[in-house]
Image (tube, rainbow over all chains, first blue to last red; front, side, top):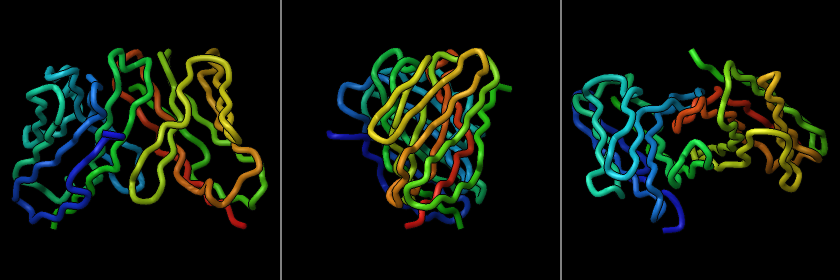
Length: 115
Length: 108
């Protein structure tokens, strides 16, 4: 594809429901990042994959958050038993290998609202 | 804690004005990024730099490694430049640490 694709663009869920957010990175990009952006704030790191390996999950705020990338391409961020503080825009970004020396390409994000 | 500080938080300008947005960071980095975010969320990478200066059209980014400081300049600003500009760094890791952004509004 031409760019990073995220779905859904908008998700409304009731508190306590589970949600799954999808990211389809640029074809061939081995590095994939998830970030969380609260309203009026800069994005904050959640987790990072290189191919199918989750190399860093230090930013996941609780054990309710889980991410996977089983085949090294599409990634899913799952949030279980959602809480109101989970409301945010979830951004996915991808890049080539040696990500610290390359620009990251961002999707349009999924705006999650928990009622 | 490794942080990224941006200033100003909000900036208003008249069309044609020269704009400067500043970014400072705390320790050594492998790269600094300037990003643009329009309403609706999409983030576009403008520059990635580790030294010196880069220019693209009316945009110029500079970095001073000794002072741990970077600036983004917009010459001859235009209403379509209105967006949030975000500074982000790689603190010798692959993940990005972001500033809180500068909201720029350019009026005709």
